[in-house]
Length: 317
Image 1: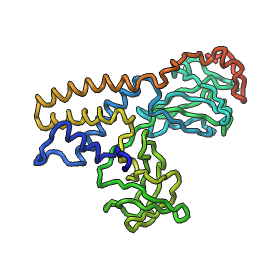
Image 2 (image 1 turned 180 degrees about the horizontal axis):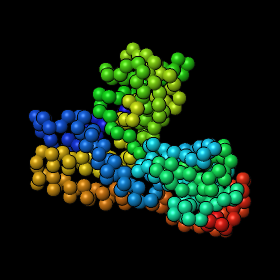
Image 3 (image 1 turned 135 degrees about the vertical axis):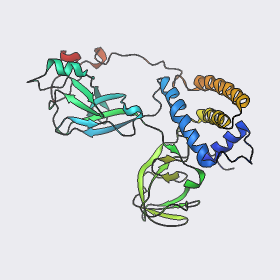
Image 4 (image 1 turned 30 degrees about the vertical axis):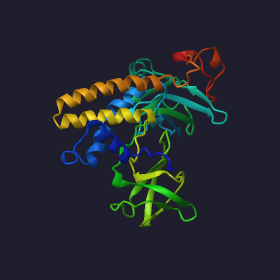
């Protein structure tokens, strides 16, 4: 028996079952279902999962600090915000030192002339800037933890699934190449298994001859992955237990669009019930180990230094 699939085609079927949309209706096509589901996922499901503080969607990027002391916040960060900023002292075993954020009023008010160690960083627009500016040597490794934005849902005709890979020729064989794809298009690949992670963030079509696609790289792509245009995913990149809730939320919006107010109210009540049940499953990621709150500057972190200037008590360090 084939493994279950969780792609947008299955999601659309689920939505239709939940709101009993007549086959004769002309209001919604697949692209509309996917657009509505994307909106509900990004506007409701993702913020809800982030609210339980269990690090869903958390990822990181490492940067080597430029001479300006500035780093751009990753463009795929939810809300253009960061979870934490760390000095990466050692990658294996992992040793990081959390850097504190300094209010801009403090930066403008006290100055830091002559100091050769960082107090922390401040935010300016979409950049974080080390302070004092120039206090950290060029090339210092800084790690940014942030919540990664989920990709928009691709319609069923706009993705394909990998059946085999040839790393020597950088080619993949898929079930069916979308007719709109041409050489030069940028793609990404998504794992077909929970938690539906992005396995290749960018690969470019060199040439294609269905069912074979030649790419500039197949790094990270695995058999069974879904491939779609860059920025789109064949699957909702949320925990599997949230997929039914997403389908129900989308069904509510569909019934609203069909002016079926009684049906919408019933569907919304069901969505509220599903929300409560989903949170029971997803809250507290490790039931046998309650998260401990530890002072990052307390005894357990004593002796942690940055290597380019001893951390002292100044500025909260």
